[in-house]
Each structure stands twice: as structure tokens, then as C-alpha cells.
Length: 505
Ligand code: BES
Ligand code: ZN
Ligand code: ZN
Image 1 (cartoon, rainbow, N blue to C red):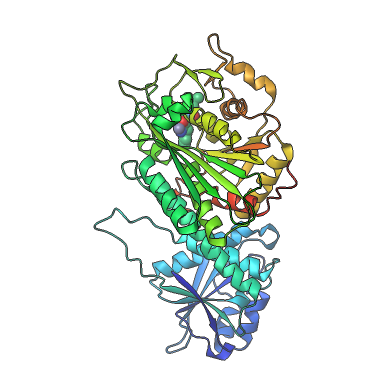
Image 2: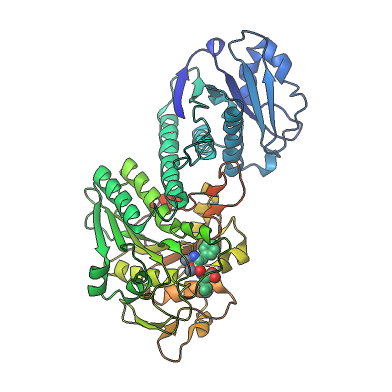
């Protein structure tokens, strides 16, 4: 869907459908939109009472104009109660409007800028969030459908109507929304793609394309090289797979930042998690194609870093491999020597994410990071703890954890803190190695974090995001249609944007 400005006097506005919002409390059109109504006697009579409409969150109503009116329809969506309004509601309401347009096969709807006035937030920010909601809500993955494909023509374009030319903030809001949605689309495409397509090679090719387009440095550490670098955890997980594995290293270092310590993102890229020899039950195993959502979120974020040419030095480290059972596969009981030198006893080969991340964290340390943030579909336990719409955030700096939580709630990536007290490590004590990769089941998401913590010295600020739940949506929600959500892209981008590298945590 194309998004374009349409600058015309009120009286000349023309569209297949004009879109607007209303609150639940004595449902009324918002003050901005009222301005337009007052110039439209017919529509004013029709819309002022908002007949049959309660303004309930996500409720929609369609009003039709008499024949030959330049504005064929008006579509309204409820925002719920005004005192519960937040940007997430705006994104979801906006997604609902555009999905309604698609359902009604409307080619060219229009959002008057006036419709965003009176929302208790800055109009440019409201425009950005509404557009992000609109675009993410329309996402569909049809690449592999050869029949029953739904037409992708509706809506063709969304016009933003206003009487005067947009100022810089509004222009920027529109551009930013497009880039943000683009990053989320990339992450979703990668996550939803099946494991026979989205292989480690495919992720590497994607990273290389981004590097070519945006001038990132890229390094693909293959399995032989990883062995030479003593990445005994990563190579053990990869050794059972016939798909070539790669540790992808992407570096965004625009002119002037080369000497800075980088902010490093580390993302789990298990392109399929069978569990390995500790094999998973077959029911729902197909879901495990999404076990690379952490890596995908980082690729989505890098696309955005490239497009805005963010003036910060940022590294992405993506250990990518399948986790397969095989004659060559690693086994429960194996003791692995990590890149850090620490030895790990494998209890479950299904706790593979923490293993590949352990070596990726050690590699990150060799790049002199100002901070490390890892993101991973790491534990089922995290879903038990927080449900499947919320990720966990933990780390070794309270302030960094809080900042990530706060950014997340602002951009719609809900994250909740979990503790990292040292005693949790007791669970990982091993008789034969420095520690084991699995404890008993209690506090599983926290213990996985404690495992990762063993690879990060206290001197390096570090946070870990467990996105096992929210990376995938079972439900068809307004701005996150059923399937891959792109969770994490926005939180990583905003964290990088506000990163002040001279003020480490
Ligand atoms: N990839 C899974 C975690 C997961 C579960 C992600 C559900 C998304 C949805 C991970 O590798 C895994 O299998 N973890 C085990 C750890 C256990 C063996 C300690 C788990 O959560 O059961
Ligand atoms: Zn696993
Ligand atoms: Zn996994």
C-alpha cells in the first residue's frame, strides 16, 4: 500500500472512504475531525450522532454518503475509553480501519490529518503510530501460495489529507513509519518462511544483501572457522545438521563512529529446532521454524539502521544453525568447551539456544562492546511465566533493563523484567563440568538467563530478551495478524537511537 500526501482545501477532498477515530465515552468525533464535519452539512447530520456506534475499542462503523458525493464513505473505529488511550490502541485501531478497507475492497481510503487531532498526543507522533499500525495490520505472507491467493490490490493507496503542506515533523513521521514497517515486514517474512527456505544460508544471503545495500561490513564465520575459533558450543549444536551453519557478523559503522565501542546485538538463529537427540514431541513441532526470530529481529533492525543511516556503531552477531538429531549430533552428557574456555555439560540438546548464544556472547566480547543485548526465542518457561504476548527482559544493569522495558511499552513490544540473583546458578552446578545447560524446570526463563550471564563479565552492561512467546501470534490481532509478529525490531531500533555511548550503564 502506497502512502501519499494529498494537499487540498477541505471542500475539494475526495476519497473512497474517509477514516476517523472516536472515543467510547459518549461517542463523539474528535475535535479535529469536527472541523471537517462542520464544512460538510450532509455528513455532519449523518456523523455527529454516530448512530449505532458505541466507540468501543476496535468497534467499527461504516457510513455511506448519498450518490455521487466526493467522499463515498466514512469509516469510524472505536478507541475505547479516553483515559485508557495509549499508542498501542491507536496502532491497533488504525490497523482495524485499514483491514476493514481491505475487506470492503476499498481502493483509495484517506486519513485526514485532522482525525489525529485531540488524541492527547503530538500529531506527528500520532501519524507515525497510526501508519505503523495500518501497515503492520495489512501484512500477509502469500509468497508460497499458488492458488487461493487473496488479491493484494486493496487498498492500493492511503492518502493523508490536509489543507497545507506537511511540516518536517510530519514528513519525517511518514517516512519513519514506512521504514519501521519495512523492518518489521522483513523480520516477519524471515520468521514465517519455512525452515527449508529460511536456512542459515538464506539468513546469510539476507544479511549480505543488506550489507551490499547499506554499506555494512559483513563476516560469515562458517563451521570450520568457528572450530578454529574454539566455538565449541556453537559447533556442537551445528554438527548434527547438513545445512551449512554460519555465525553472521554485521557491522554498521558510519563515518565518524569507527573508533566508538559498538552497541552489540546478539540474536538466536536456530532455523529449525527439533530438540536434537532430546527430541521434541511431534505435535506442533512445525512451529519451531520460528526459533530464529531473535536473529530476524536484528536483521529487521539493521535494515532500518541502514535506511536512516543511524550515526552509531552497531554490531549484529547472529549464530545460525539447525538443531537436528543425527549420527553426528551432540548428545546429552557431552561436555563442551566454549570459546570462553568454560566447560558445559549438556543435559538436554533442546536447550541449544543458550549454547550458541554463549559462544556468540564470547565473540561479542572480542569486539570491545559498550553493551550487549541479546534477543532469543529461548524458553517455553518464559511463555508459562508471562503468557505469549509478553517477552522477558533481564540483565546485569537494572537501569538498562528498565530502559528496555520502558522503550518496549512505548513501541508495543511488551517486556517484563525477571530477576538474575546469583543463587539461581545453584541449579546449573555440574559434577563433571563448570556448569550444565539445564537445571530442573523451576524458573526456567531466569535460569536460562543465568546461563548466559556466565559468559558476560560484570564490567560489560548486558541485557537478555526472551521472546519465545511474543515472536509468534496464535491469534489474529489487529496490528499483529496471525503468525510472525516482528517482535523486537522496534525495541532494538529505539534503544539504538537513544543509545548514548559516552554514558554507559
Ligand atoms: N526454542 C525453544 C524454546 C521455545 C519454546 C521457543 C516454545 C518458542 C516457543 C528452546 O530451544 C527450547 O527448546 N527450550 C527448552 C529448554 C529446556 C530443555 C530447558 C524448553 O523451553 O522447553
Ligand atoms: Zn530447543
Ligand atoms: Zn530453540
